[in-house]
Length: 479
Image 1: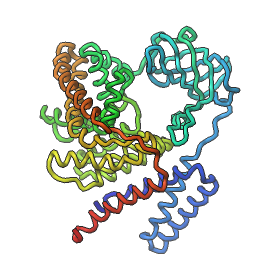
Image 2: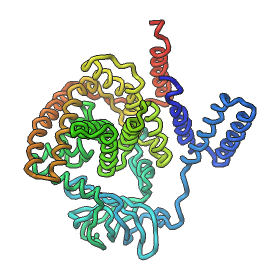
Image 3: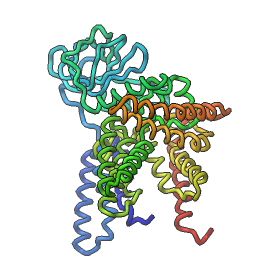
Image 4: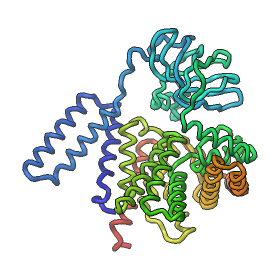
């Protein structure tokens, strides 16, 4: 893996560094650095020293990152500029599908357009107590909400929920009762929400509740209906990542579509185009989570390489995915999902993996665990001691369950009888998956709770991993 094959890696690292330094960087300083970098590059090119332009180029990219990551002031008509807390009548459109996260509580994301009859803008996350009327993404509603500034628990070193909401563009939260919410139009959900709803309905009809909820987690990343003991078991076993739609699911889907198209005697390029269309559609259905976007971008790049008959550089594809996501959503740099997804993938790509199915799978699991360790400790204060071993059983079962579940859900759009056959085949796999997770979670000390490491410890740990990789890749003669 040479630097020429991954030129975007230093670029995205510089851009991410700029975003990270944005809170402590004045806008004028960032513009000055950017302008000086451009002038320096032009001067070096003029005197034929193009090879010296790398440093000013990266400095300019870091300056752009600082500018992109700067927090913009809220517009004058934003709902956060109201005198809060207060009770107000809010009219707006649902920006996402309603989420029922408790038997009597539903979470709505409202894109407000009027508050107490006056034009307003901004997103409000509202909790509705009771049974709301049928609602769908994109539907206009009105509700009497008690509005508050978005805040969270202030435990030192704990998860900053207010910062998480701010990254999602949410600065105001609200509460109301179901009888104080009125739909202003009939539900007209977009096609992606209709597909998601039909998939959930098909799973609920064909499988027992716990298995349907587990399959919903594998296929759609939805965990609200998952029984508490199963959810906690996945956490304790260190395999919760299989319930978060990520590269694991996207890679399986892309490979399955490509293989089925080849079996149907479609050409290589036709199969690649079909796989690209399906994974993009899948991303639209499950939502724009950082792990999903990363996996979809990488999958599209790999499949596009097949179309162009070029060899795909995985590290460069990973860097391009990060660069695209951070350009559009710079706040994702601080998101745990973004950090976990890219750290795990980078660890697997960079690590020297042994050959052999079992040993190689263990190496993949260990590489991912080592890469995400500082992230999990910093955000969740947890260390999994059984995750590396548990993944050897859980990942194959989750993969098989995902393939069978996708096949069954796809058949549900054509024939309920055929879909039932697919769900019947997936059910024992789901039971085996639950058993493997429960066995791993029951191991004493499966999860160790530790304090969040200081930044210096994280830097030293990361530097140690990088030095070990450099020794492996650059010093074969010394071994």
